Image 1: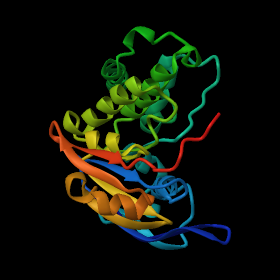
Image 2: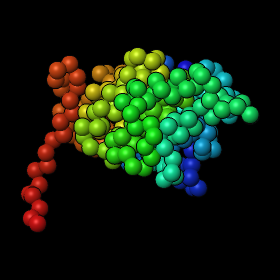
Image 3: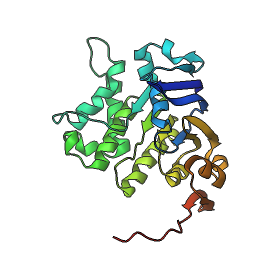
Image 4: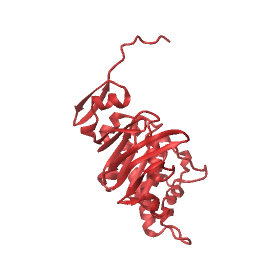
Length: 262
């Protein structure tokens, strides 16, 4: 169980997270949703230890994460940031090999098991045939799947993803999130992902944490948490929430303002 207890984070004099308490259920996909600047990405960074806490603490199976050696922590936790970069010369195969760094000894490279993990990760995301291609020559959707393969090859129990479908076409948003969802269904991973689209959240996530102004407004199972009242509280948006083909659909109300002439 990964949990945050009364976690606060500030950038200078601006408090970004305010006594946030939330527990992430193992083997489930949890979406973090809320307006821009509400603290979603900061919460992931706090979990990873990338930003200092001004209050509270984060535990993994009851142990404060700051007491877990970083190499051991890296074997338990994988992180995909909003923007990922690599040198032009790096091939897909070389990128995936970097995922095993936390498992390598000082003088050794990938083991046979590591190479099996690399192959399996590429098969899962459907990029096996592109292993010798430079990462930066891939399409946007392929690159995002490449970074997800790197996260998979890390073989950690918990995967944190900050906007994993940012800047990619709708078709690839669904294909990427299907891969992410299968991390929980087929591989038993715990996934925590920042998402902006409520309909993607209801389609793929099991749990949701709804944030506004650095505070948790609502959290729990998607089916019990996303409703017209919570959407209005978090986004200042009136919307109808209804079930279609077994999943929730969010339909915002149209503005009655006159269209803008161009």
